[in-house]
Length: 198
Image (cartoon, rainbow, N blue to C red; front, side):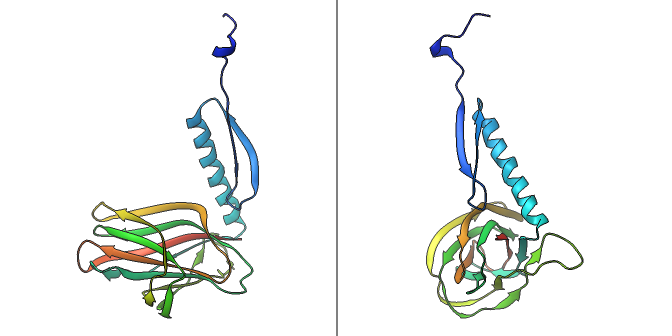
């Protein structure tokens, strides 16, 4: 085979980044961007398994809520003052028998927390660690707070997972509110959240 000229030389893509905790990771090199992306996804999954093994990965779901066409406060998540930990949101889930919009806000004005949700460790063991988060469904608010992002469920009788991969971070004394607005009245909906506590 003939030698490659300079212009024909194989190109290497170099991707630098951080892991889900914000710690710098070694650069990834690949001649195929698709392979690079898959490598990053595998790395993130491996990191989550490591954190779960250490008892730092939690999930909490609301009960089934009947939510209609008016935007409704459905899920309140607080990293309390003095927790000593950062909370990194990995995923937000909506299970519904209809279509609708899920919105995420920060610093809502809350007058009543609502029904307590106890996040569960995904490390199943005899004495699992307890979450530091304060989590509630159906809170009462006078202001939703500052809008951050939204996503729309479009499939009937389906579930939607919105992957944040730890990029939404709550320091101590920070709160987010999740609202739901469905396309029909009395639509059964539940909301869940998976997070790391680091």
